[in-house]
Image (cartoon, rainbow, N blue to C red; front, side, top):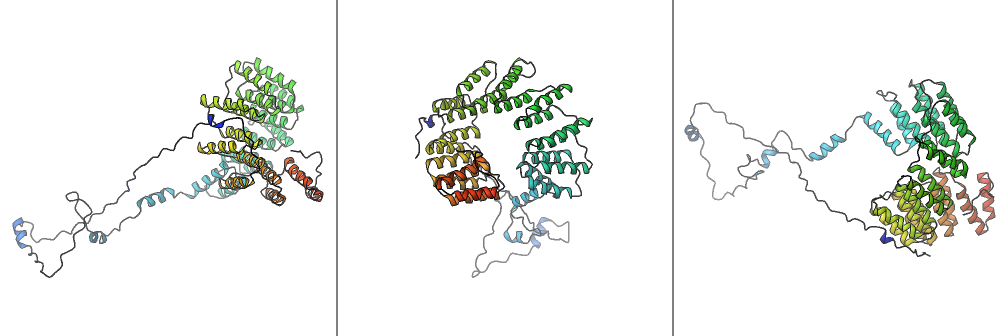
Amino acid sequence: MSVASPISLPSSFPPSPSKAGFSSTVRPSRVFFCSFRPRIRRRSSTSSPSSRSTSSPPKKAPSVDSPPPPPKKRHWKAGEFPGTSESSIAGSPRPPIKNVKKKIDDRAAAKAWACTVTEAFSDRVEKKQWEQALDVFEMLRMQPFYHPKEGAYMKLLVLLGKSGQASRAGKLFETMIGEGLEPTSALYTALLGGYCRCKLLNEAFSILFKMKASPLCQPDVFTYSILLKACVETSRFDLVDSLYQDMAERNIAPNTVTQNIILGGYGKAGKFNEMEMILTAMLDSDTCRPDVWTMNIILGMFCAMGQIDMMEKWYEKFRSIGIEPETRTFNILISAYGTKRMYDKMTAVMQYMRKMAFRWTTSTYNNIIGAFADVGDAKNMEYAFEQMRSEGMKTDTTTFCHLINGYGNAGLFNKVVRSIKLAEKLEIPPSTFFYNAVMSACSKADDLLEMERVFRRMKERNCTPDSATYSILVDTYRKEGMHDKIYSLEQEEGRSFGLEVVNK
Protein backbone atom coordinates (compact mmCIF):
# COMPACT_ATOMS: atom_id res chain seq x y z
CA MET A 1 0.00 0.00 0.00
CA SER A 2 1.04 3.53 -0.59
CA VAL A 3 2.41 5.25 2.51
CA ALA A 4 1.33 8.83 3.00
CA SER A 5 4.15 11.30 3.32
CA PRO A 6 4.16 14.03 5.96
CA ILE A 7 5.57 16.50 3.43
CA SER A 8 3.53 18.60 1.07
CA LEU A 9 5.48 18.61 -2.18
CA PRO A 10 3.50 21.23 -4.12
CA SER A 11 4.92 23.94 -1.86
CA SER A 12 8.48 23.06 -2.85
CA PHE A 13 7.87 22.33 -6.49
CA PRO A 14 7.18 25.41 -8.57
CA PRO A 15 4.40 25.27 -11.13
CA SER A 16 5.59 23.99 -14.46
CA PRO A 17 6.06 26.85 -16.89
CA SER A 18 3.44 27.11 -19.59
CA LYS A 19 4.67 26.48 -23.06
CA ALA A 20 4.68 29.67 -25.01
CA GLY A 21 3.49 29.29 -28.54
CA PHE A 22 5.59 30.74 -31.29
CA SER A 23 4.19 31.13 -34.77
CA SER A 24 6.36 32.08 -37.69
CA THR A 25 5.19 32.56 -41.25
CA VAL A 26 7.55 30.93 -43.67
CA ARG A 27 7.32 32.45 -47.11
CA PRO A 28 8.05 29.79 -49.69
CA SER A 29 10.62 30.74 -52.23
CA ARG A 30 9.26 31.11 -55.73
CA VAL A 31 11.17 30.76 -58.99
CA PHE A 32 9.99 33.16 -61.66
CA PHE A 33 10.20 32.35 -65.33
CA CYS A 34 9.52 34.77 -68.13
CA SER A 35 9.13 34.04 -71.84
CA PHE A 36 9.14 36.86 -74.34
CA ARG A 37 7.58 36.83 -77.80
CA PRO A 38 10.14 36.43 -80.58
CA ARG A 39 10.94 39.65 -82.38
CA ILE A 40 9.55 39.98 -85.95
CA ARG A 41 12.25 40.51 -88.52
CA ARG A 42 11.60 43.61 -90.62
CA ARG A 43 12.93 44.33 -94.04
CA SER A 44 13.54 48.02 -93.46
CA SER A 45 15.01 49.52 -90.36
CA THR A 46 13.91 53.01 -91.38
CA SER A 47 10.23 52.34 -91.51
CA SER A 48 8.16 54.69 -89.47
CA PRO A 49 5.66 53.67 -86.80
CA SER A 50 2.86 54.65 -89.11
CA SER A 51 4.13 52.41 -91.88
CA ARG A 52 4.53 49.52 -89.48
CA SER A 53 1.01 49.99 -88.21
CA THR A 54 -0.44 50.17 -91.71
CA SER A 55 1.51 47.16 -92.95
CA SER A 56 0.30 44.89 -90.19
CA PRO A 57 -2.46 42.52 -91.30
CA PRO A 58 -5.93 43.38 -90.10
CA LYS A 59 -7.30 41.45 -87.20
CA LYS A 60 -9.87 38.83 -88.05
CA ALA A 61 -13.27 39.66 -86.61
CA PRO A 62 -14.69 36.84 -84.52
CA SER A 63 -17.71 35.14 -85.94
CA VAL A 64 -20.99 35.38 -84.16
CA ASP A 65 -21.31 31.62 -83.69
CA SER A 66 -17.73 31.05 -82.41
CA PRO A 67 -17.32 30.73 -78.61
CA PRO A 68 -15.44 33.49 -76.79
CA PRO A 69 -11.73 32.78 -76.19
CA PRO A 70 -10.73 31.66 -72.67
CA PRO A 71 -9.43 34.44 -70.46
CA LYS A 72 -5.67 34.75 -70.42
CA LYS A 73 -4.16 33.67 -67.10
CA ARG A 74 -1.62 36.02 -65.62
CA HIS A 75 1.13 35.22 -63.13
CA TRP A 76 1.67 38.84 -62.14
CA LYS A 77 -0.45 41.83 -61.45
CA ALA A 78 -1.20 44.22 -64.23
CA GLY A 79 1.69 46.64 -64.76
CA GLU A 80 3.99 44.74 -62.45
CA PHE A 81 5.81 42.43 -64.86
CA PRO A 82 5.27 41.20 -68.45
CA GLY A 83 2.64 38.54 -68.11
CA THR A 84 3.17 34.94 -69.08
CA SER A 85 0.65 32.25 -69.66
CA GLU A 86 0.77 28.57 -68.86
CA SER A 87 1.39 27.82 -72.52
CA SER A 88 4.46 30.03 -72.58
CA ILE A 89 5.85 28.32 -69.47
CA ALA A 90 5.21 24.92 -70.99
CA GLY A 91 7.10 25.97 -74.09
CA SER A 92 10.07 27.28 -72.14
CA PRO A 93 13.32 25.43 -72.89
CA ARG A 94 14.10 25.21 -69.15
CA PRO A 95 11.60 23.22 -67.07
CA PRO A 96 10.49 24.70 -63.75
CA ILE A 97 12.35 23.67 -60.61
CA LYS A 98 10.09 21.91 -58.15
CA ASN A 99 10.66 21.73 -54.41
CA VAL A 100 13.65 24.06 -54.34
CA LYS A 101 14.06 23.84 -50.58
CA LYS A 102 14.36 20.05 -50.73
CA LYS A 103 17.08 20.29 -53.36
CA ILE A 104 18.99 22.82 -51.28
CA ASP A 105 18.74 20.60 -48.19
CA ASP A 106 19.90 17.59 -50.18
CA ARG A 107 22.93 19.48 -51.40
CA ALA A 108 23.75 20.64 -47.89
CA ALA A 109 23.42 17.09 -46.57
CA ALA A 110 25.68 15.67 -49.27
CA LYS A 111 29.15 15.38 -47.75
CA ALA A 112 32.37 13.70 -48.65
CA TRP A 113 33.12 10.16 -47.55
CA ALA A 114 35.97 11.38 -45.37
CA CYS A 115 33.71 13.64 -43.30
CA THR A 116 31.15 10.85 -42.94
CA VAL A 117 33.67 8.41 -41.47
CA THR A 118 35.25 10.90 -39.09
CA GLU A 119 31.88 12.18 -37.90
CA ALA A 120 30.66 8.62 -37.38
CA PHE A 121 33.77 7.93 -35.31
CA SER A 122 33.20 11.00 -33.13
CA ASP A 123 29.53 10.09 -32.74
CA ARG A 124 30.33 6.56 -31.53
CA VAL A 125 32.91 7.87 -29.07
CA GLU A 126 30.48 10.48 -27.75
CA LYS A 127 27.81 7.81 -27.24
CA LYS A 128 30.39 5.58 -25.49
CA GLN A 129 29.86 2.74 -27.95
CA TRP A 130 33.36 1.30 -27.85
CA GLU A 131 32.73 -1.69 -30.16
CA GLN A 132 31.22 0.45 -32.90
CA ALA A 133 33.93 3.08 -32.37
CA LEU A 134 36.64 0.47 -32.98
CA ASP A 135 34.88 -0.76 -36.13
CA VAL A 136 34.60 2.76 -37.55
CA PHE A 137 38.21 3.47 -36.60
CA GLU A 138 39.37 0.39 -38.54
CA MET A 139 37.33 1.63 -41.49
CA LEU A 140 38.98 5.03 -41.13
CA ARG A 141 42.46 3.50 -41.17
CA MET A 142 41.72 1.85 -44.53
CA GLN A 143 41.07 5.18 -46.25
CA PRO A 144 43.82 6.63 -48.47
CA PHE A 145 43.66 10.00 -46.71
CA TYR A 146 44.23 8.48 -43.26
CA HIS A 147 47.06 9.85 -41.16
CA PRO A 148 47.57 8.73 -37.52
CA LYS A 149 46.71 11.47 -35.04
CA GLU A 150 47.20 11.65 -31.31
CA GLY A 151 43.69 13.00 -30.67
CA ALA A 152 41.93 9.99 -32.22
CA TYR A 153 44.01 7.51 -30.21
CA MET A 154 43.50 9.57 -27.07
CA LYS A 155 39.71 9.41 -27.45
CA LEU A 156 39.77 5.67 -28.00
CA LEU A 157 42.14 4.97 -25.11
CA VAL A 158 39.97 6.96 -22.70
CA LEU A 159 36.78 5.32 -23.99
CA LEU A 160 38.19 1.81 -23.70
CA GLY A 161 39.50 2.53 -20.23
CA LYS A 162 36.14 3.82 -19.02
CA SER A 163 34.39 0.84 -20.63
CA GLY A 164 36.58 -1.65 -18.76
CA GLN A 165 38.46 -2.79 -21.88
CA ALA A 166 42.02 -2.39 -20.62
CA SER A 167 43.42 -5.24 -22.74
CA ARG A 168 42.02 -3.72 -25.93
CA ALA A 169 43.47 -0.36 -24.88
CA GLY A 170 46.91 -2.00 -24.58
CA LYS A 171 46.62 -3.52 -28.08
CA LEU A 172 45.50 -0.17 -29.47
CA PHE A 173 48.52 1.49 -27.89
CA GLU A 174 50.82 -1.03 -29.61
CA THR A 175 49.05 -0.37 -32.91
CA MET A 176 49.64 3.34 -32.45
CA ILE A 177 53.37 2.79 -31.92
CA GLY A 178 53.47 0.48 -34.96
CA GLU A 179 52.07 3.31 -37.09
CA GLY A 180 55.00 5.48 -36.13
CA LEU A 181 53.21 7.80 -33.72
CA GLU A 182 55.43 8.75 -30.79
CA PRO A 183 53.81 8.22 -27.36
CA THR A 184 53.41 11.24 -25.13
CA SER A 185 52.88 11.71 -21.42
CA ALA A 186 49.15 12.25 -22.02
CA LEU A 187 48.81 9.01 -24.04
CA TYR A 188 50.70 7.03 -21.41
CA THR A 189 48.48 8.54 -18.69
CA ALA A 190 45.33 7.59 -20.64
CA LEU A 191 46.54 3.98 -20.93
CA LEU A 192 47.52 3.94 -17.27
CA GLY A 193 44.06 5.24 -16.36
CA GLY A 194 42.46 2.35 -18.25
CA TYR A 195 44.48 -0.19 -16.28
CA CYS A 196 43.63 1.60 -13.03
CA ARG A 197 39.89 1.56 -13.74
CA CYS A 198 40.11 -2.20 -14.29
CA LYS A 199 42.06 -2.58 -11.02
CA LEU A 200 45.15 -3.89 -12.87
CA LEU A 201 47.75 -2.27 -10.63
CA ASN A 202 50.71 -4.33 -11.88
CA GLU A 203 50.16 -3.22 -15.47
CA ALA A 204 49.57 0.36 -14.30
CA PHE A 205 52.86 0.47 -12.40
CA SER A 206 54.68 -0.99 -15.40
CA ILE A 207 53.42 1.98 -17.44
CA LEU A 208 54.69 4.29 -14.71
CA PHE A 209 58.17 2.74 -14.91
CA LYS A 210 58.19 3.18 -18.70
CA MET A 211 57.29 6.83 -18.28
CA LYS A 212 60.10 7.34 -15.81
CA ALA A 213 62.57 5.77 -18.25
CA SER A 214 61.47 8.05 -21.11
CA PRO A 215 62.90 11.58 -20.92
CA LEU A 216 60.01 13.05 -22.97
CA CYS A 217 57.19 11.23 -21.16
CA GLN A 218 57.75 11.99 -17.51
CA PRO A 219 54.77 11.44 -15.16
CA ASP A 220 53.04 14.48 -13.73
CA VAL A 221 50.63 15.15 -10.89
CA PHE A 222 47.70 13.81 -12.93
CA THR A 223 49.48 10.49 -13.49
CA TYR A 224 50.14 10.08 -9.78
CA SER A 225 46.60 11.15 -8.89
CA ILE A 226 45.14 8.37 -11.06
CA LEU A 227 47.47 5.81 -9.48
CA LEU A 228 46.66 6.99 -5.98
CA LYS A 229 42.95 6.72 -6.68
CA ALA A 230 43.37 3.13 -7.87
CA CYS A 231 45.39 2.27 -4.77
CA VAL A 232 42.81 3.60 -2.32
CA GLU A 233 39.93 1.99 -4.24
CA THR A 234 41.64 -1.40 -4.05
CA SER A 235 42.61 -0.81 -0.38
CA ARG A 236 46.32 -0.87 -1.22
CA PHE A 237 47.11 1.86 1.26
CA ASP A 238 50.67 0.52 1.62
CA LEU A 239 51.41 1.91 -1.85
CA VAL A 240 50.09 5.38 -1.04
CA ASP A 241 53.10 6.38 1.07
CA SER A 242 55.58 5.12 -1.55
CA LEU A 243 53.83 7.12 -4.26
CA TYR A 244 53.88 10.24 -2.08
CA GLN A 245 57.61 9.72 -1.51
CA ASP A 246 58.18 9.27 -5.24
CA MET A 247 56.35 12.52 -5.91
CA ALA A 248 58.48 14.35 -3.35
CA GLU A 249 61.69 13.08 -4.97
CA ARG A 250 60.54 14.45 -8.33
CA ASN A 251 59.40 17.77 -6.83
CA ILE A 252 55.77 17.06 -7.75
CA ALA A 253 53.54 18.69 -5.17
CA PRO A 254 50.10 17.12 -4.63
CA ASN A 255 47.26 19.46 -5.48
CA THR A 256 43.78 19.70 -4.01
CA VAL A 257 42.46 17.04 -6.38
CA THR A 258 45.11 14.58 -5.25
CA GLN A 259 44.36 15.21 -1.58
CA ASN A 260 40.64 14.90 -2.16
CA ILE A 261 41.16 11.49 -3.76
CA ILE A 262 43.12 10.20 -0.77
CA LEU A 263 40.66 11.82 1.61
CA GLY A 264 37.71 10.06 0.00
CA GLY A 265 39.54 6.73 -0.03
CA TYR A 266 40.39 6.93 3.65
CA GLY A 267 36.81 7.91 4.45
CA LYS A 268 35.31 4.92 2.62
CA ALA A 269 37.78 2.58 4.31
CA GLY A 270 36.99 3.98 7.75
CA LYS A 271 40.53 5.27 8.34
CA PHE A 272 39.41 8.39 10.15
CA ASN A 273 42.78 9.14 11.78
CA GLU A 274 44.59 9.29 8.42
CA MET A 275 41.66 11.22 7.02
CA GLU A 276 41.87 13.79 9.79
CA MET A 277 45.63 14.20 9.23
CA ILE A 278 45.15 14.99 5.53
CA LEU A 279 42.26 17.36 6.22
CA THR A 280 44.29 19.18 8.87
CA ALA A 281 47.22 19.50 6.46
CA MET A 282 44.90 20.97 3.84
CA LEU A 283 43.47 23.49 6.29
CA ASP A 284 46.99 24.61 7.29
CA SER A 285 48.31 24.74 3.71
CA ASP A 286 48.51 27.88 1.61
CA THR A 287 48.72 26.12 -1.77
CA CYS A 288 46.44 23.13 -1.23
CA ARG A 289 43.39 24.53 0.47
CA PRO A 290 40.15 22.51 0.74
CA ASP A 291 37.47 23.35 -1.80
CA VAL A 292 33.84 22.48 -2.38
CA TRP A 293 34.85 18.97 -3.52
CA THR A 294 36.51 18.45 -0.15
CA MET A 295 33.29 19.58 1.46
CA ASN A 296 31.23 17.17 -0.65
CA ILE A 297 33.53 14.25 0.15
CA ILE A 298 33.24 14.80 3.90
CA LEU A 299 29.49 15.32 3.78
CA GLY A 300 29.00 12.34 1.49
CA MET A 301 30.97 10.11 3.84
CA PHE A 302 28.81 11.03 6.84
CA CYS A 303 25.70 10.71 4.66
CA ALA A 304 26.65 7.12 3.75
CA MET A 305 27.29 6.37 7.42
CA GLY A 306 23.96 7.88 8.44
CA GLN A 307 25.58 10.35 10.86
CA ILE A 308 23.36 13.36 10.25
CA ASP A 309 24.68 15.36 13.23
CA MET A 310 28.31 15.08 12.08
CA MET A 311 27.28 15.96 8.54
CA GLU A 312 25.56 19.14 9.70
CA LYS A 313 28.49 20.02 11.95
CA TRP A 314 31.04 19.79 9.13
CA TYR A 315 28.70 21.67 6.81
CA GLU A 316 28.73 24.63 9.14
CA LYS A 317 32.50 24.35 9.61
CA PHE A 318 33.19 24.47 5.87
CA ARG A 319 30.82 27.42 5.52
CA SER A 320 32.72 29.24 8.27
CA ILE A 321 36.00 29.07 6.29
CA GLY A 322 34.39 30.57 3.20
CA ILE A 323 33.49 27.48 1.14
CA GLU A 324 30.16 28.01 -0.59
CA PRO A 325 27.95 24.97 -1.30
CA GLU A 326 26.93 23.93 -4.79
CA THR A 327 24.11 21.87 -6.24
CA ARG A 328 25.88 18.59 -5.51
CA THR A 329 26.25 19.63 -1.87
CA PHE A 330 22.50 20.12 -1.55
CA ASN A 331 21.91 16.82 -3.34
CA ILE A 332 23.92 15.08 -0.62
CA LEU A 333 21.84 16.77 2.06
CA ILE A 334 18.58 15.82 0.34
CA SER A 335 19.73 12.22 0.03
CA ALA A 336 20.74 12.07 3.70
CA TYR A 337 17.50 13.58 4.99
CA GLY A 338 15.39 11.49 2.61
CA THR A 339 17.06 8.25 3.68
CA LYS A 340 16.38 9.06 7.33
CA ARG A 341 12.81 10.19 6.44
CA MET A 342 13.46 13.67 7.80
CA TYR A 343 11.07 15.21 5.30
CA ASP A 344 10.85 18.59 6.98
CA LYS A 345 14.60 19.19 6.57
CA MET A 346 14.54 17.75 3.06
CA THR A 347 11.79 20.19 2.12
CA ALA A 348 13.75 23.07 3.66
CA VAL A 349 16.78 22.25 1.50
CA MET A 350 14.60 22.04 -1.61
CA GLN A 351 12.99 25.39 -0.89
CA TYR A 352 16.37 26.98 -0.18
CA MET A 353 17.66 25.79 -3.55
CA ARG A 354 14.67 27.39 -5.29
CA LYS A 355 15.07 30.59 -3.31
CA MET A 356 18.79 30.93 -4.05
CA ALA A 357 18.31 29.98 -7.74
CA PHE A 358 20.27 26.73 -7.53
CA ARG A 359 19.31 24.72 -10.57
CA TRP A 360 17.85 21.31 -9.83
CA THR A 361 19.68 18.53 -11.65
CA THR A 362 18.89 14.93 -12.51
CA SER A 363 20.59 13.85 -9.28
CA THR A 364 18.37 16.24 -7.29
CA TYR A 365 15.20 14.66 -8.66
CA ASN A 366 16.65 11.16 -8.32
CA ASN A 367 17.27 11.75 -4.61
CA ILE A 368 13.71 13.06 -4.14
CA ILE A 369 12.16 10.19 -6.11
CA GLY A 370 14.34 7.70 -4.22
CA ALA A 371 13.23 9.07 -0.86
CA PHE A 372 9.57 8.45 -1.73
CA ALA A 373 10.34 5.13 -3.43
CA ASP A 374 11.87 3.69 -0.26
CA VAL A 375 8.57 4.08 1.61
CA GLY A 376 6.35 3.18 -1.36
CA ASP A 377 4.85 6.66 -1.66
CA ALA A 378 3.81 6.32 -5.29
CA LYS A 379 1.78 9.52 -5.39
CA ASN A 380 4.56 11.94 -4.45
CA MET A 381 7.07 9.87 -6.40
CA GLU A 382 5.00 10.24 -9.57
CA TYR A 383 4.53 13.94 -8.92
CA ALA A 384 8.28 14.45 -8.66
CA PHE A 385 8.85 12.43 -11.84
CA GLU A 386 6.26 14.40 -13.82
CA GLN A 387 7.75 17.67 -12.56
CA MET A 388 11.16 16.42 -13.64
CA ARG A 389 9.97 15.74 -17.17
CA SER A 390 8.01 18.97 -17.42
CA GLU A 391 11.19 20.93 -16.70
CA GLY A 392 12.95 19.11 -19.51
CA MET A 393 15.31 17.28 -17.16
CA LYS A 394 17.00 14.23 -18.62
CA THR A 395 16.15 10.93 -16.95
CA ASP A 396 18.75 8.22 -16.47
CA THR A 397 19.04 4.63 -15.28
CA THR A 398 18.95 5.66 -11.61
CA THR A 399 15.63 7.44 -12.15
CA PHE A 400 13.92 4.31 -13.44
CA CYS A 401 15.56 2.13 -10.79
CA HIS A 402 13.90 4.30 -8.14
CA LEU A 403 10.56 4.23 -9.98
CA ILE A 404 10.60 0.45 -10.31
CA ASN A 405 11.57 0.01 -6.65
CA GLY A 406 8.90 2.46 -5.56
CA TYR A 407 6.12 0.77 -7.52
CA GLY A 408 7.33 -2.61 -6.28
CA ASN A 409 7.21 -1.44 -2.67
CA ALA A 410 3.72 -0.01 -3.24
CA GLY A 411 2.50 -3.22 -4.88
CA LEU A 412 1.70 -1.47 -8.18
CA PHE A 413 3.22 -4.07 -10.45
CA ASN A 414 1.30 -2.94 -13.53
CA LYS A 415 3.14 0.39 -13.27
CA VAL A 416 6.43 -1.50 -13.01
CA VAL A 417 5.78 -2.84 -16.51
CA ARG A 418 4.87 0.65 -17.73
CA SER A 419 8.11 2.05 -16.33
CA ILE A 420 10.16 -0.64 -18.09
CA LYS A 421 8.46 0.11 -21.41
CA LEU A 422 9.01 3.85 -20.93
CA ALA A 423 12.69 3.23 -20.23
CA GLU A 424 12.97 1.26 -23.47
CA LYS A 425 11.16 4.02 -25.36
CA LEU A 426 13.54 6.66 -24.00
CA GLU A 427 16.53 4.41 -24.82
CA ILE A 428 17.72 4.30 -21.22
CA PRO A 429 20.81 2.05 -21.13
CA PRO A 430 20.16 -0.91 -18.81
CA SER A 431 22.68 -1.71 -16.11
CA THR A 432 23.14 -4.25 -13.34
CA PHE A 433 21.25 -1.99 -10.91
CA PHE A 434 18.37 -1.67 -13.38
CA TYR A 435 17.99 -5.44 -13.76
CA ASN A 436 18.28 -5.86 -10.00
CA ALA A 437 15.36 -3.47 -9.52
CA VAL A 438 13.24 -5.37 -12.05
CA MET A 439 14.10 -8.75 -10.49
CA SER A 440 13.29 -7.41 -7.03
CA ALA A 441 9.88 -6.23 -8.25
CA CYS A 442 9.23 -9.67 -9.81
CA SER A 443 10.19 -11.32 -6.53
CA LYS A 444 7.75 -9.11 -4.60
CA ALA A 445 5.04 -10.04 -7.10
CA ASP A 446 5.85 -13.76 -6.64
CA ASP A 447 6.54 -14.05 -10.37
CA LEU A 448 9.48 -16.47 -10.41
CA LEU A 449 9.33 -17.22 -14.11
CA GLU A 450 9.62 -13.55 -15.04
CA MET A 451 12.42 -13.08 -12.51
CA GLU A 452 14.43 -15.90 -14.08
CA ARG A 453 13.74 -14.55 -17.57
CA VAL A 454 15.06 -11.13 -16.54
CA PHE A 455 18.16 -12.80 -15.06
CA ARG A 456 18.87 -14.57 -18.37
CA ARG A 457 18.26 -11.36 -20.27
CA MET A 458 20.69 -9.59 -17.97
CA LYS A 459 23.50 -11.99 -18.83
CA GLU A 460 22.67 -11.80 -22.54
CA ARG A 461 23.12 -8.02 -22.41
CA ASN A 462 26.60 -8.47 -20.83
CA CYS A 463 25.51 -6.94 -17.50
CA THR A 464 27.55 -8.73 -14.85
CA PRO A 465 25.44 -9.91 -11.89
CA ASP A 466 26.62 -8.72 -8.48
CA SER A 467 26.00 -9.87 -4.91
CA ALA A 468 22.64 -8.07 -4.82
CA THR A 469 21.53 -10.01 -7.92
CA TYR A 470 22.25 -13.37 -6.34
CA SER A 471 20.71 -12.21 -3.06
CA ILE A 472 17.40 -11.59 -4.82
CA LEU A 473 17.50 -15.00 -6.48
CA VAL A 474 18.56 -16.96 -3.40
CA ASP A 475 16.14 -15.19 -1.03
CA THR A 476 13.25 -15.81 -3.42
CA TYR A 477 14.11 -19.48 -3.81
CA ARG A 478 14.44 -19.90 -0.04
CA LYS A 479 11.11 -18.21 0.54
CA GLU A 480 9.45 -20.64 -1.85
CA GLY A 481 11.39 -23.63 -0.50
CA MET A 482 13.13 -24.28 -3.82
CA HIS A 483 16.48 -25.50 -2.52
CA ASP A 484 17.10 -27.43 -5.73
CA LYS A 485 17.07 -24.11 -7.60
CA ILE A 486 19.73 -22.75 -5.25
CA TYR A 487 21.87 -25.85 -5.86
CA SER A 488 21.46 -25.50 -9.64
CA LEU A 489 22.43 -21.85 -9.43
CA GLU A 490 25.55 -22.71 -7.45
CA GLN A 491 26.56 -25.32 -10.04
CA GLU A 492 25.88 -22.95 -12.91
CA GLU A 493 27.79 -20.01 -11.45
CA GLY A 494 30.52 -22.11 -9.84
CA ARG A 495 30.22 -20.51 -6.43
CA SER A 496 28.55 -21.08 -3.10
CA PHE A 497 25.92 -18.62 -1.89
CA GLY A 498 26.52 -18.42 1.83
CA LEU A 499 27.78 -15.40 3.71
CA GLU A 500 28.79 -13.69 0.44
CA VAL A 501 25.18 -12.95 -0.37
CA VAL A 502 23.98 -9.63 0.98
CA ASN A 503 20.51 -9.97 2.44
CA LYS A 504 18.37 -7.03 1.52
